[in-house]
Length: 113
Length: 116
Image (tube, rainbow over all chains, first blue to last red; front, side):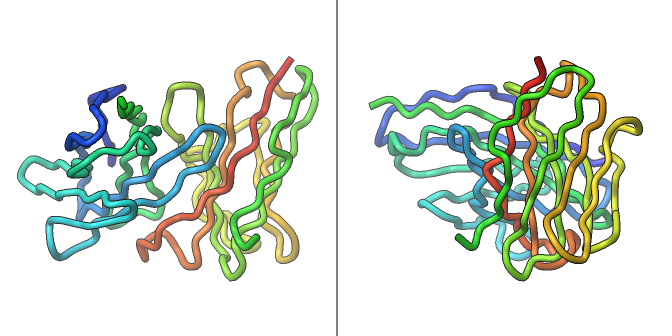
């Protein structure tokens, strides 16, 4: 069965510094990976996805993620954090042979001014 | 507003009552997914529907919960005889084609269900 882990409940970063939000996954087939962001009292917003091709994927709001097959990871990154990036971030995975997406528990990102 | 619309945004029910949550997918989307989010937890998949069909309900509790997506009208998630443990945020997402095509899901802002 597929699963996804976000090992950090919370990440604190100073504004202007680079940020990384970690995600590891487990699937039996080919992984399809996603990152979403959730602001308070709102639904999830799609940031980026990895399906195939380049391991570095660029998405919305300056975010990018790197797919690492050997480490089964898909960490979310941004070179320079903004206070407005503070939110809850979810990593998600779909196994190639399945229809549904499985979400991690989320990582709360705090960008400190 | 062309986004996924959920209503009501907040719903309060007493134990034993029924809760009906509605979701209108984005225009042109025929695939709907329901998720439940408990405080400080991620989203748990409940059910995946296509128009008039349940495709995958492996995340739905076997009792008291049901979902439908009729040919006309919104998708409905129905919870009968609610209990305190049903208190959560329920999110609906839609996509234009099925999950295996890897189109991102578009989410509504959720219904926050509180059971007194």
